Length: 338
Image (tube, rainbow, N blue to C red; front, top):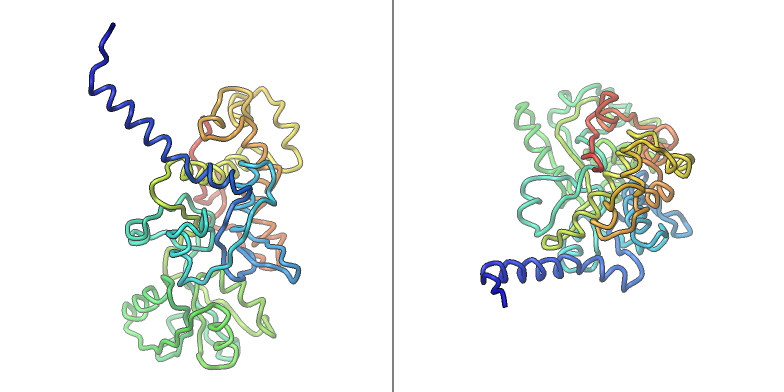
């Protein structure tokens, strides 16, 4: 009998063990019958429930896309509203399978939370909102201003860095939630409301007279927002990554919710790989051959998701800007499906 070298035996055993460990989250989600997705407690355009409890937003669509890829049913998601303070604990403890809650990708979060960012759903930056009555046209005119800010976010450090860097004084008035921060600003407890620009546009819609408030032009930070998953499950990490990458690639390839079935008949090599008619890329992820089509049918390509939730087709009317595809003047880019 031919003897197998011990080193190869141990390597094979280790590989099988790692493979088994890496499939735990997908198995847990399948056995449960739904995805548990951590979102905000209500940020229009990103994750917000209506009066009937129906959730919408970019962060919501990411989770619906994951559910579609796994179950072929985008409704198999339980949305768990989380504060900025509690969001990471919920992921670490296993209360949620993925955190999709307008969260900024930073080095410290990437290394200290036991979690991985899976991509960038929205390239953002911190800004300032003021009442038009103050007649302020630039953030550089905010010396000695009182600033409302939400705790547990990257906003506080960015604020300190900006004012110190420009030799300006300021007073911080901090609150635990975004709604508390907005209420304090609206009632005059501070002069300025600072947050990610996307959040400023969203929160402005909640004010009694949105037109009386203006977002100043300065962007003082880089805030790449994206989903997070726990360390230690590479298969799950890959699945969540490639749901977003599928949407970005779909926009680049011209695949939409309306034409997905027709495009699936294409003989173009890149489309055949995406739709699973050539190769087994879906199975390599632990999904099915039609994983790509399932996602696009459920939530559309990236551009459709953006426009519907925060862009031209939404109340926020935010320009694509940096979130345009890389070949249309933006920096939104995904690895190829091959």
